[in-house]
Length: 255
View (tube, one colour):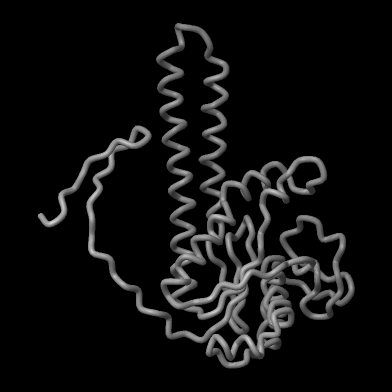
């Protein structure tokens, strides 16, 4: 063999490591633009002017079930004290470690598959700066404990780094944008729904327009990004034609 494999033990797991020849990715030929709305129920909701994407929809359910099982195992370790439970604590810690690794691997798989799909289909990607650490801080946060934990577990910041790394290999551009009021603003009439709270569905109290909350956010992020970054000039720099949002198609989508 040209490259001899090595066997490694890392955190109780055996790995076979070997070198392979790297493959140079083919740069994307697409000139499409997409805006993403990060979330929990759906990891990423995207709108590209005509089509809606829901990436990782429902994946948090499986991850959260594993997290709950991990909590139960950790509580058993705390309850089973004393020398007579030494072996039980050892087995429980080993099982808990396996679940942590499984959760980490599932999240990494979600990140990699989502990033690879996006950079293969789109030339320009708008991604909000999702400041998880600030949003989950106790005190003034409005999130439930379950939602806060899910946000930390999904690690949106780590996904942002993965996406940017993949984008450099495929010749794509990831633009950081802000998302203030994008979920609360009606994508039809512009009214700000200040009492939306954690509702899954956006229903405008002014005009009655109703649709999925994340979808409404993705649409508004696209419009806001196009406006805030003066895209007519920047699109030319990226060799992308000036972009048109099909408002009629979007407003006809079911809620």
